[in-house]
Amino acid sequence: MKKVLVATDKPFSKVAIDQIRSVVENAGCKLELLEKYTSEAELLAAVEDVDGLIVRSDIVNSNVLNAAKKLSIVVRAGAGYDNLDLAACTAKNVVAMNTPGQNSNAVAELVFGMLILAIRKHYNGSTGSELRGKSIGIHAYGNVGYYVGLIAKGFGMKVYAFDPFVSADRMKADGVEPVNSVEELYKTCQFISLHIPANDATKKSINKKLLSLMPKGAVLVNTARKEVINEDELVALMEERSDFMYVSDIIPGNQAIFEEKFAGRYFFTPKKMGAQTEEANVNAGVAAAKQIVNFFKTGDETYRVNK
Ligand code: 3PG
Image (cartoon, rainbow, N blue to C red; front, side):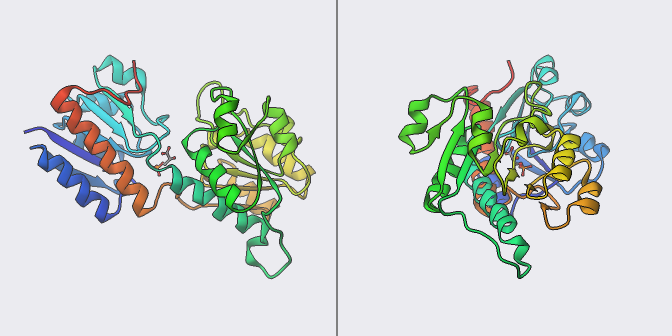
């Protein structure tokens, strides 16, 4: 009997686990759980005899892959797969997948939760401002970007996007105004929502030069990855511009500086919360389970991300 392990430092809801279990058990496999683990050693012990692995942002590196002697597939239940060592997966003959789109709406809703918190001054009693009529720039128009645009239109915002991999026609069809360069996006929009993946091309790419183009009252919303921000330069910019705010679903490496210098101008979720809704847990978790059992049954490699 094949074994599937769900290894999540940040657990799925019970309802999601129940549904994942039923997908796995109905396919004649066994489900195992490792939740809220605190050391790599626990993960290494848990993967030893499993055939399939479901993770979230949990690190799957060569240590994990070496320990997982029977593993043939790992699915990142979510969008960004920068936590998977793809080359090591390929070297070990392990198929790596993600579940694109499944948690996108949850992340997009949090964008506005954090944006409103910022422009309403953390509900501290002083006068804030509204979203209606303001411009939001979606930096990378993938699944999350699409939902951000949809919600922004509901707020009566002007919606712009930059994404060299998505056609202008597709954006226009969604009622989103495409711009031709990343600089134009930052120059045009008071609010920017980041949806770029963390990779060699994007790491530290959100720098002072780019951010300084943003109009007065700028808010940068990061539900993507902290690695894409040049954190030292963000601090330098916020020192120069007292109007600039940063809200993020990922705690930056230099959090202490924000606490010391930028009171009221930043917000960080204590734990990454974008995808932490019951709906997103069910969507992403069940999709991951289905992808694994289909792979076992038919060899289906849809959503494979390693070569
Ligand atoms: C993703 O890439 O899907 C999101 O960042 C969610 O990550 P999480 O599953 O660790 O909450």
